[in-house]
Length: 168
View 1: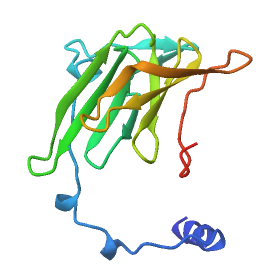
View 2: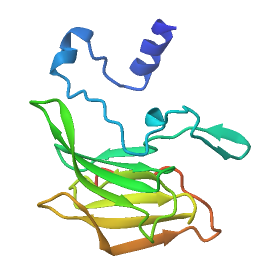
View 3: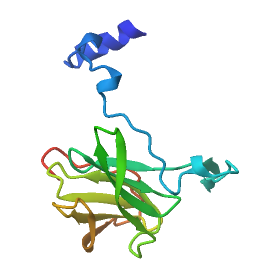
């Protein structure tokens, strides 16, 4: 299996990265964060909902780095968006902003930030649309007062979202 994987990488022209070139785990910006709506904090351990007949558990349904040290996450079950600042010295996330039950979002499912960090795109599962919002360059907070909404012509739901390198 491993040999087949290396062969595929070679065929695709992708370069192998030797394990010795990877940084040690203690040098990685690794942190664990539970959002206020996390199912991991549910004392019953049974907070879930159903999607197309399947039981689904979600805590942060989408995350995106919006700058070198700021991370945004959306929580579909909690109907919330959180922005955190990463503190590398403490290896922790500090809450910067929480948007909960904003009228424009009913079930924010996924998020992506533009390469220049000026905008985020957020999919909304219940509204079947995509919203593009500005990010304040100083505070890194997501601004709700100025946004664009993109809807699929056949009212389809976008579950994933990503910006290209050129920002489109």
